[in-house]
Structure formats: structure tokens, C-alpha cells
Amino acid sequence: MVRLPVRFLLAALLAGILSALALTGLQAARQLPLIIEAERHEQGGATPLAPPERPGLPRMATGLLANLLAGIGYALLLLAGYGLMGLASPRGLAWGLGGYAAFVLAPSLGLPPELPGAVVPDLALRQLWWIATAAATAGGLLAIAFARRRAWKVAGATLLALPHLWRLPWPEGSGSAPPELAAEFAVATLTVNLVFWVLLGLLSALAFERLVSRPHAAA
Image (cartoon, rainbow, N blue to C red; front, side, top):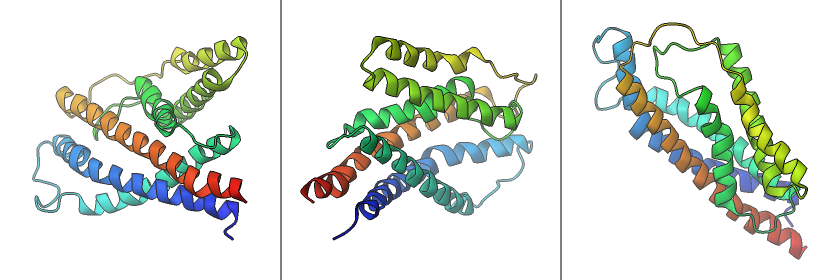
């Protein structure tokens, strides 16, 4: 009989890998051409950076590896949430949208998706703000969704707003990419990640129900 931790890990691997594969394909179709175009602007419109028939292939392989690690890690977080909340049949779509709000949408309000050549704040400040915003948003959403007392729900709503009261110090100047290219990249990034999180939520809930919840209840 397969033990619960093994089934838990298997569920995370299945949901994370499938979602990461879909994310990588969407990134190659929507984001990578915009990144390559921005790099050409950064270099002053020099010759293409990659052959047209295989644009950014090594970068896609690196991106796939990063997406696999992120997909599995996020799947583990969702599955842990299902288990801690005692959910036998999780609402995967709601959890996926919650993950999107916490890890993509809320951070993007202060840190829009960046193209090469963009003028951005200090890296350490960006990382600190991103972590604080993601943690506060996740905690706030969980409090609003699961807390029974109104005071905790109010505290959750307050958590959602707190990170956005601290505005990062942006340096003066503009990036090398045209504003319309940066806007198109931001929309593409938000859209691609929305699909990823919806898929991850649905797949992780299905995997949890089939591989973790039902077998554990039967045992």
C-alpha cells in the first residue's frame, strides 16, 4: 500500500509538471517574442539575437526547468492547504484564482512584469516587497475565506491592503522598449499566468481527491 506522503508527492508532481508544461508553451508563444524584441531595442535595433526558425530555444529549456520547479513547489503549497483545511474535495478553481491573486496579480500592482532594458527599483527591495505582498495577500485571502469571526476577516482585508501602502522608490528615466511593447508584455504575462494558476488549481484538486483524500479515507 502506497503511503500518504508518497501519494501527496505524486499528486504534486503530476499537477505541477502538467501545469508547467502548459505554462512553458504559452510563454514561448506569447512572451518570448516580446522579450526578444525588447532585447533588440536594448541593443539599438541590432541584428536578431536568435535564428527565426528556433527563437530562444536554449532560453526555453531554461524556462521549462524553472517552471517545473515552480509548478511543483506551488502544487505542494496548494496540496498542503487542502490538507490543513481538512478539504476532502477542494474547489480547485477558487484556490487557483487565489494563488494567482497572491503570487501574480497583487505583486504586479507594484511591480509590473519587466522587459529587458526596463528601469526598475533595487533588486533586494523588489524581492522583499514581492515576498511581503505575496505572503500578506495569501494570508488575507485565507482569513477572509475560512475565518469564522468577523474580526479575523477584517484583519484579512487589512492584510490585503498593507503592502500597497509602501511604494517602492522607482529610479528616474524610461526603459529602452517602447511603452506599447511593455504594455503588451504585461498583458501577456498576466494572461499566461492566469491560465497556469487555473490549470494548477484544477489539477491539484483533482490529484488530491484521487490520490490523497479518497485512498486515505478508505484506509
